[in-house]
Image (cartoon, rainbow, N blue to C red; front, side, top):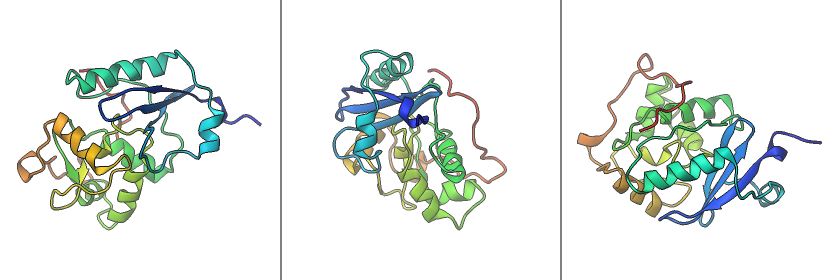
Length: 194
């Protein structure tokens, strides 16, 4: 029986922080995980079922844009994304993270409050941790309430490196402004190219 997950393809690309597994579905980029030291990636049997391809339009565009990002030439990504594997709440959190600009951070609490669910800090943290599109959906920009680096499925050393690359100093002067639920709405538009 074929499912959307069965029709995915993958490739591995290098990065300064280690190899990255890129996965595409018919709807867009569906996964971006570090190959080594990654938590919350799909089970090994699912990864093995997805064919590895030498070329694919979405994977090629993602690889090019990631290369530009690591060179400091790109701050956001212009790719079709497939976030359908998440729950409705997870997708809302993932869309909200897309609004955090490069060079800024926000806390789990501020993200929860911005979604109109200030009591859902732990649920927001769990959704952030399950983000299937590391870097592209910038979960590395979410930090502890005091600005400390907490939780990153690819490892805290990588989170720190990504924030340094983006020049996001972890202090109050560089944090994403606190937003209310009336100003923070999940984006349904694609990210602009920069």
